[in-house]
Image 1: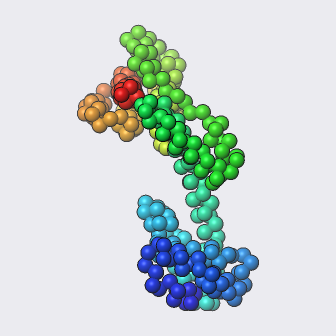
Image 2: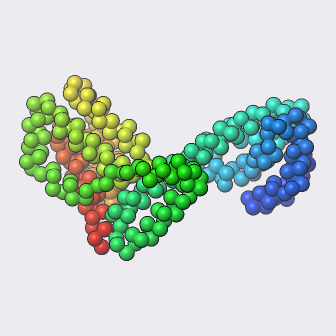
Image 3: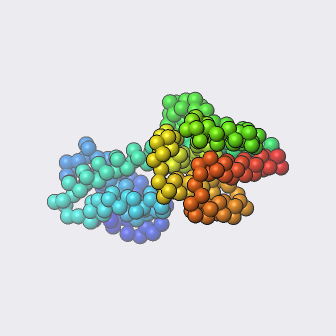
Length: 302
């Protein structure tokens, strides 16, 4: 590996390193190294040379926020680059295994990102002012093309076949009136929790539509069947109910405009003092959620 090290010693930035690694002579030398340790059939020169990019430019390869999560493969890349020849065979095999795992994971994360961004644009277009909708549609079309290029026809079909829930921006402003809450409270007191179940499902879908990238977290916090079962069995402790409510409020806070922060935090303070009657909790959550939808409506009508 010393010959390759020598060819890279003057490379200080990403582009110069990439150019040096893609040079025909560098690839030829790497192939000869692999051949000398009987791995020229199992490992490609470019795969082995990826070890240099990971060590010299980890931020560009993994992303600044993911370098720490890839310390294992970086450690093996360092072993490959700096080991003696008698250990090179085993280190290269291990690096190749880790590299394939990383590449597959990175590929799936890319597809997930395209999927989330494509369907976030569906919601953005619905709520955007008319004058920028065509621009967003163009971005969505280009993202669809990129999805097909990266993931192929099947991934394109997946993008087109998924229909995200569309929020009726007026629904929370008209449906959940005094009569609704009176009935909700009566049914709750009679231990009929059908309305509770339906409301939690609706709120979960609203939040997932507004923030598809947070879908897993939202589903984890608002686990409707679990919450329904716990309420039905009167199994929530005061601390558990506080935790649940605070987690829901955190979701709402991440979605609404900062101007509503004070109202939310005042309510959080009330909750943490022990005011934990579930119909009242949900009524306040609905009111806070309505603020989000009203803001979107105002933005759309500008």
